[in-house]
Image (cartoon, rainbow, N blue to C red):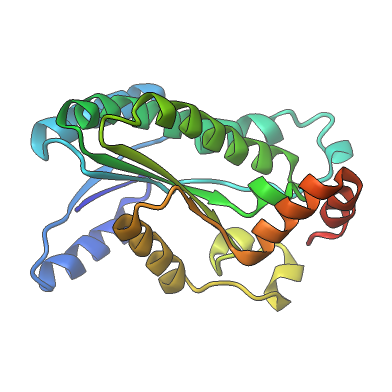
Length: 222
C-alpha cells in the first residue's frame, strides 16, 4: 500500500499498524498544491513501488462562505480548485500512462454530495469537486477500452476536523471515518462508476425535474 500526504506522522502510524498485521506500506510526503512535488512523487513511486493499481484522490479542502463575503477573498475559490481539482488531475495524469500501458487501473475520486446538490455557501468547494468529476468522465471515455475505471464517490458528511467549524453539522448525521473507509474499500471491489447517497440522488432527480425545486433544495441545504 502506498500512502501519500503532506502530514507524515499519522500515515507513519498507519503504516506501522499495517506492518504489524503482516501488510506492507510505504509513506511518501508530498505537498499536493505544488506541481513540482507531485511530478517528483510520481517518479519516486514508479521507481520504488512500480505501477499503481488503484489511485484514491482523497485530499481535499472545503470552504463554507457566502459569495458576498468572498468578494475580496478570491483565494476562497483558488484554494479548493488547486487542491481538489488541479492536484488530483496532475497526479492522475502522472500515473495514468502506466495504467493504460498495462490495461489495468482504477482511479477513485472522493467527491461529495455537494457536487450533486450544489448547496448555497459552498460555491468554491462544489465547483472544484464537480470539475474533477467532469474531467474524469471525459477521460473515462478515452480509456474505456484500456482497462482503466474512474469511480466518483459522492461522499456524505464524514465526522472529521474539516466539518468541525460548522456548528450545525455537529447535530447532523455523518459517517464515521471507519464507515467512510468502508465505502472506499467497497468501491475498489465493485469498481462502480458512481457511488451516491440516497439524498444526493434524490436532489439530482429533483433538479432534473425542476431547476426551481433544485434552487429551493440548495437554499435550504445545511
